[in-house]
Length: 316
Image 1 (cartoon, rainbow, N blue to C red):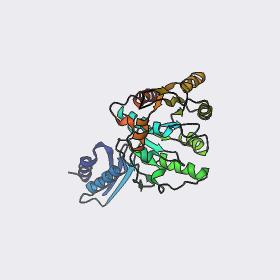
Image 2 (image 1 turned 30 degrees about the vertical axis):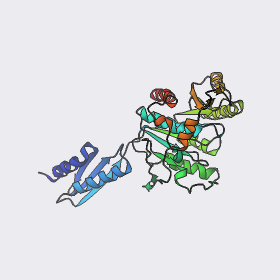
Image 3 (image 1 turned 180 degrees about the vertical axis):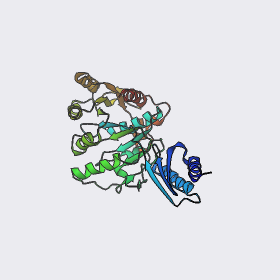
Image 4 (image 1 turned 45 degrees about the vertical axis):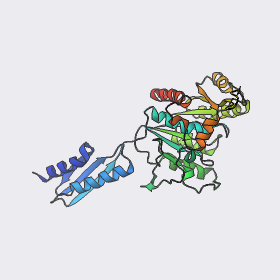
């Protein structure tokens, strides 16, 4: 058997059709397609290919690793002001989309107030960097996560100016997300430097706006919608959070923040209304404990919202 045939057979045994081989005398040049492989799998395959190509008579092995950029879609979850439940929605939306069959990653881009490590039961885990890229950490819910909260000491204030915060966002978004086809970005509240960098540099496929029903929150939500509209980013829809409270003791129902304000605003602005998330003790306690309700089989709150987002993504 000719040397090139021996090399091709040996490399095909470990890499299949991912490897294209060219021989120049006794030197082997191999182009390895690593599309869809994580950093660890890519490194192992490269090592296996080098070993397989090192047949007797081969004096040099050169391996070039390439990967097509996956058509990954970024979904920004934003709010005009803080305290409206944006992070809770982001975590549960990511999990619900994963349960619906998407390969989802979660970016905690709320640089100044990262809360996803707690929500996703990933506190105490720190990402490592490989080839200059952060490796997302796994979570119990099948959604890998990168968060500034994993990179700084717990309870330490992150007092960064705009350019530093925007640079940190870039490192999170550009992490090694492997085969993830969708990234959910939990943005900081407001319309500052981080949001501007995100819409200009990373260009999300669409944005979801979260608001409580009260008028003051809706005023700020309209500002967030205006930011995305001016940047040409489609608004996937508006979610009304803290929409009604049912007392766990007496069963009485009340609307401490009002009701229907976000839906009315969505109608006025001609954008989709994705649904309501009630103000409940169960959602609060589950979130604090790192057990997002969307992970439960009986979830009826976040799954319908995710279904609409999933349908939107299929059309985008």
